[in-house]
Length: 339
Image 1: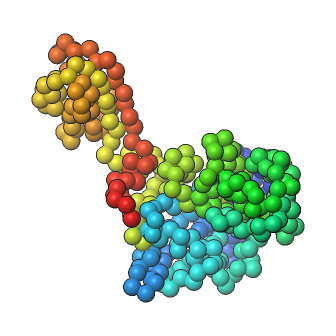
Image 2: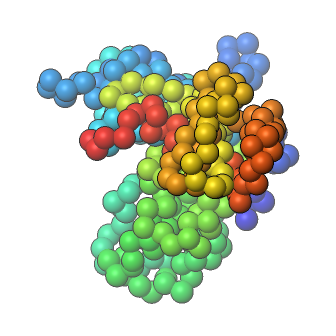
Image 3: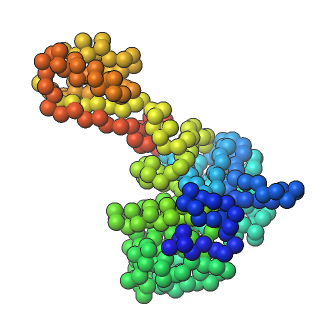
């Protein structure tokens, strides 16, 4: 639906699907169209009394991408996003949305930016379809309300007051409210919190459709599998600083590597295996008969392992390669202790 029903004025740049859009394109003084970052944060610094919430953050979001901003609670994500949305004024540094100031140029940006609030943003007594029709009426060229309700599984709930919707249903309505105006940039705060698996995957599909239609998505989430599945770029923020960034594959590859687990007879002597394995690779017996090899797992490493087993006349009952996930990389970078 979304890729077919773009506004008539969205033409000029080709997306990966061939749909045409103008997200993030500006005109320079010479009249030549030049690409502009959808979000450009430089040296952002925010302090609350003695607490530094954001410590000289640099962050760029390219048009037509899904960019996730991840971090533990209190890392500075919310403050960073709120300065982008124009709710807070930077104390130091600069924030630009499509080259514009989120506060000084709020009137120009308002039609171009959608914001999904985790708390909902709807009146408690209003019905779902009334709220969405009201939001649509505020925009010049909104998406078809009934189609959007259907895509998010809300058609049967149009007569239900907002306060009587489940938490997941309220989340889906909040997402619909954020995108109904066909924004060029959407900030999504925990968009699948409280959703069941079916609704979660439907929401992921909608987010992908938005991205493939040329819409820029900035996503904050505590679900690492969500960020791994959806993101083109991930920024990890901890204690107010960007500590890592890149596409999910790059971040996962920068971790401690994958793991091979195998089962065999208990008590194998592993000294020969350790000597044969590449440097910085470990081999341990975690429990009787349960073994783990961790490091940079490659075809050569697997060949070494199976050759060693053959030399020991050992037939493994199972061999399992467990790849590094984004959650593994996140925990390595930010630690495992509770905040």
